[in-house]
Image 1 (tube, rainbow, N blue to C red):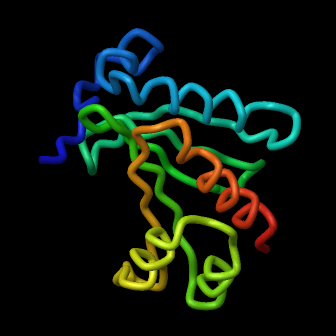
Image 2 (cartoon, rainbow, N blue to C red):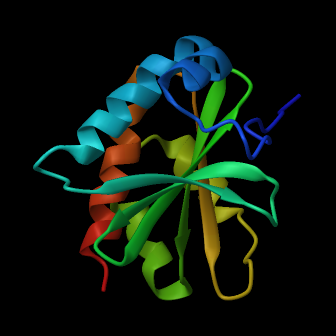
Length: 140
């Protein structure tokens, strides 16, 4: 069963908290955050507590544009992207795992946005996430 964690406003998700929550998937999380923060991507990850969802979420931004959201779950983390009808087609052109494309094609709209959510538990999954991030950054 999936359990979202980090529901205590007083407990900031620092390295120690995330290592405990994510377990072995912390290696993948740390690799992703370090890569996103490097010169090539120059993205800014920022943890905030959101009252509506009663948990901490990491918003990853490129200047003022939100690129993706990261949430901590029991032994894995989710990376969430949101696309429009117009921009969703580009996902099929990416060299990423077919399962991601299939799941995305079945996603139901949330208003005008279509969510693409990836559950990450292994470092090997980071390459697909980075390809989607590069695509998202290029969008207007």
